[in-house]
Structure formats: structure tokens, C-alpha cells
Image (cartoon, rainbow, N blue to C red; front, side, top):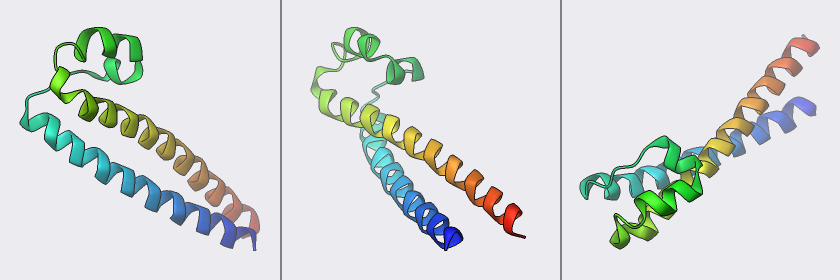
Length: 96
């Protein structure tokens, strides 16, 4: 029963992660085509993003904010997915 729950959670998180990565790639394509450039430090530091990047590209504000939000969420999902993979491995090792 426990293995089934972990497998189900793993598959659900994997689907959500792939879904959000597809959304990230869609917005990323728009930003690349329009040559909007910013670094990883802007993704993780909201103040830096608002002071350095958003004034530089005001017409792409919604795309930039959407990209940053989806990237943060995708990173969180990847962390949870990694934890589930570890739990799944531990459960399989324990019950074998």
C-alpha cells in the first residue's frame, strides 16, 4: 500500500513538473525571440528583478513575471520530486 501511494505521488509530481516546464519553455521562447536578457540572480531576487530588469523591458513585464513565477514553482516541484524519488528508493530498499 505504501509503495502504491509513493508511486502515485511520484507520477503526479512528475506530471505537474513536466506541465510547468512546458509553460516555462513557452514563455522563455517569447523572451528569447524579443532578446530579453536577465540572469539567475534576477529570478531569485525579486528586488533586483524589479529595479534592474522590469524598467528595462516594460512591454514584457507580464512575460518576465510569469517566467520567474513558473521557474520558482518548477524548482520547488523538482525539489519535492527529488524527495519523493529518495523516499521511493528508501521504501524499496527497506521492503526487499
